[in-house]
Length: 69
Image (cartoon, rainbow, N blue to C red; front, side, top):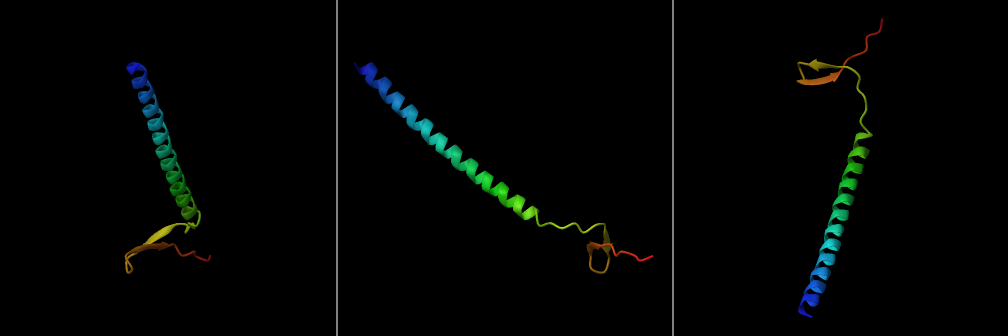
C-alpha cells in the first residue's frame, strides 16, 4: 500500500506543478502581448519628416526646407 500512496502524492504534486507553470506562462504571455501592443500604438503616431539635414547652429537634424522653383 505505501507505493500506491507515494505514486498518488507524486501525481498530485506533478499536476499542481503543471498548473502552476501553466498559469505563470499565461501571465508572462499576456504581459508581453500588452507591452507589444503599447509599442505598436506608440509607433503608429510617428510622422514622416522626409529628408533631414544637419543644422550646425542647433546641433540637430531638421527637416530639409522645400525649395520653390
